[in-house]
Length: 229
Image (cartoon, rainbow, N blue to C red):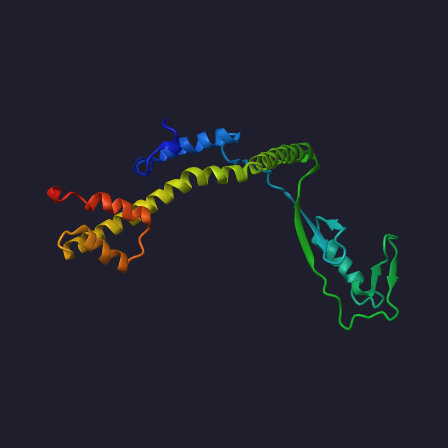
């Protein structure tokens, strides 16, 4: 393929998507950027359905039971106990792990709100299978993150390559469209000027701020020898 930088504006404007992609990859290759696809999120292995329901208290979430009535009994023992402290009545002290209790404890003005919550669990016999799935998914996730990091190392280089190819291509299209608008409009001024280029140019430059490059192209189209008109 012809060097992209040696293509004319007309040639660039007629490039297909496939050709633009090839030029983009050539630009990546010049910069030493690996030509690889963006990493896609892996398909993780699904866990089997957890068949056991464990119940626990919102107050004592470390105590679980398969029987919600057991949690209700615990709530019954705690309800009305005036010696229970609010969590705001104490806090940890530095790195000692010890607590400092407030001088004046704020007793509960109303009974504690006890709630029974539930979560699912697996039977012990499924331990190995569940751990295997965890490990497999963790490995997939780790590989995906490493691939993302590798991809991210060349983000700036890819953006530069895109600007060099796709950015230039868009600029050329915009420039040619702008030129087409100016040349079509200039044709109307040629009619008004009786096909006299210099007169039309005087009219046009007073009305529009056209770039020098555009005026040069207009001159090629409309400023022809008298015998060619």
